[in-house]
Image (cartoon, rainbow, N blue to C red; front, side, top):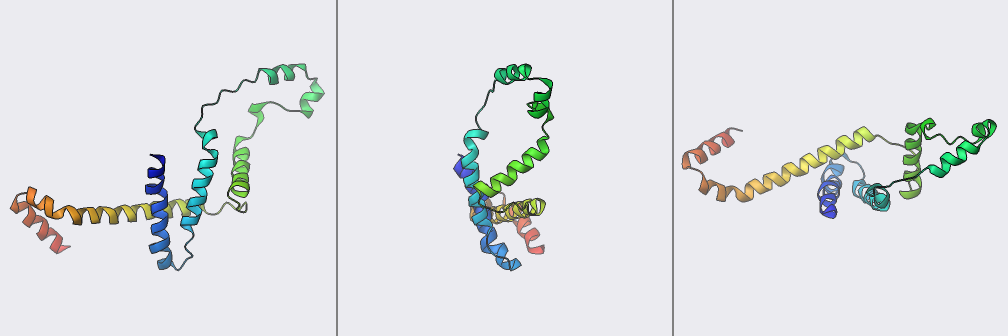
Length: 158
């Protein structure tokens, strides 16, 4: 199921972007390559992100209680003192550098997100239009003729 969802929501829109949108914008077609890298990253970290972990810190707490005041300053073990925003940014930069083999540049995440959503919307619109075009003859038989005439009239005015 995961592979089907990732194909429909990530690979197909990226391929659509590279085949249709990138040439229109006169940009290089790199979205599919980047999407495949992201999928490889997700597969690499999935054992760590989908597993419930239960960590015990009894040994660390015991060690902390044995340290002198000077040693506590030299070896801080307080998890609450960690700046999690800084830690997550560093972890993301490390993931990009060592797992994706990219430089540490963050890029433009909002613009990429917007482009991703626009590509998904365009692709969904095309697929829905094709589905409507393919099923129209069958649906027209189910509706009364007056409804079909009305829909044709409305569509002719658009």
